[in-house]
Amino acid sequence: MADEMARANEVTNLTPAEVAAGVEAGRILLVDVREPNETAVERYPEAVIVPLSTFDPATIPDPQGRQVVFACRSGRRSMTASLAAQDAGYPYKAHLAGGILGWKAAGMPTRTG
Image (cartoon, rainbow, N blue to C red; front, side, top):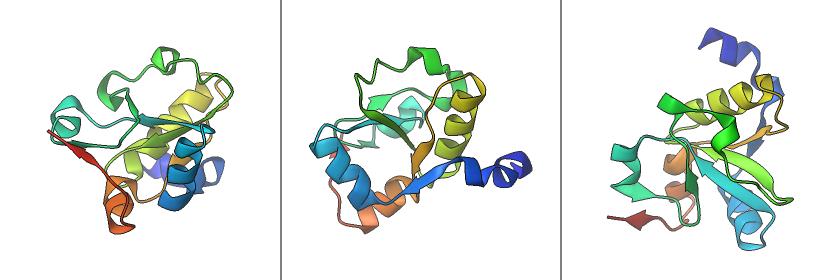
């Protein structure tokens, strides 16, 4: 974790409003790195799920020109995923600051069940 904090400047923080607008406009591919037990309860609309426990950036669907943005519960795992992807040579430098907690606090919709 200390390593992630030291490298925090390598990850771009995006707000829920920025991410929601980008997803809606087709500019952002949202990648949820939470675990299946979490996403089964509540998830981001339109996100692809690539759990951090088995994370391999090569399994992320082709973004087809969209910006890849990672998301999780609070923003820690999404930062870890971004750094891991960058370390593997991918240009995925953004995450949803505050995760799904911030997303819901901003009034953004989720899917349940």
